[in-house]
Image (cartoon, rainbow, N blue to C red; front, top):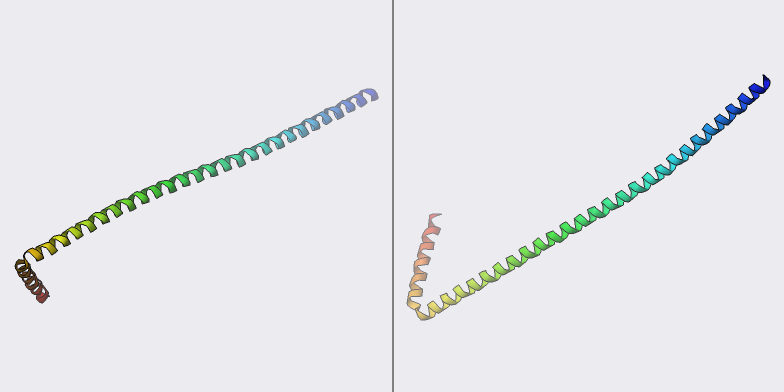
Length: 121
């Protein structure tokens, strides 16, 4: 009976050792999987960061393009308005040289009208 008890004890020890070994192996596998998960998360974070930076670069480039277009359009309009103002100035100067009496009469009438409006206030 003692032999059966020793055999059972030995088997129990072996079974316990086997279970402990399996648990240790399982723990190592979980640890390896956790490390892989950490690495995957780090890679994903890096990829998302790069994606975000790319989107920021695209938005910045787009905004710069819009700003450049707006500036060019504004510059063109300013140039056109300056050209028109210069043309009107030349026309007025030419009118004064060609018809000084009419220009003087128009100036007097405009001065009178401006005086009337100024006196009302």
